[in-house]
Length: 241
Ligand code: GLP
Image 1 (tube, protein in one colour):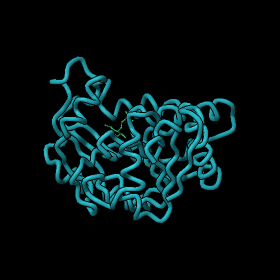
Image 2 (image 1 turned 90 degrees about the horizontal axis):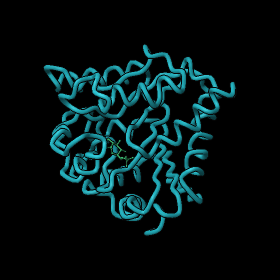
Image 3 (image 1 turned 45 degrees about the vertical axis):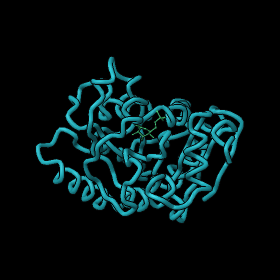
Image 4 (image 1 turned 90 degrees about the vertical axis):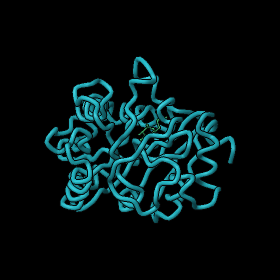
């Protein structure tokens, strides 16, 4: 695992955008794994800036989101379909037909998970998976105790995750109870993994991921198994290393 510690959130975003832009220059049809949450927002903005300046073309890039809430209307502003459209597809100029999000509204969610795995496989896998980390060490929505070999499936959100994400909703009760998320095994299959984290609130999870034991109690520690994982963090997020 390469750990890169930079001064602040802005430097995290620029450094992560450099890595992603290099991949897209090398491989204009790259398959990018995209995360929601606030952590990668700066990275998306830095990439969008390069697109606007004419230094990056994402028209042939495809994208696979990590996860989606179950039972939230797709048009809800906080459905990950909407969040990805607003923060990734439009600002980066991706072709919407090449952007995929798990189907949290499917009648058969097990089949929806299998379909998503098939879609990723048909695209020959993800070239680079961008990740944030939850305060409890989750990646995607793989909460503590997730199987290290898991694939896309339904999970119950941890109370801490629902509380953390309540800021995006009017009330805590509005945060869905369940989600459909790529598994840790799915994430580990990406040819490259890039995790970004900023701020003191992530310091304990970052330390457990990097220096703790490989354990399902800290799902992000699964990245210790990845052959090409890079973690870009600011000084605050690195403060417990
Ligand atoms: C969310 C997402 C994750 C994200 C994490 C951290 O709920 N499902 O993909 O990495 O929690 O969120 P944030 O970046 O807002 O702290």
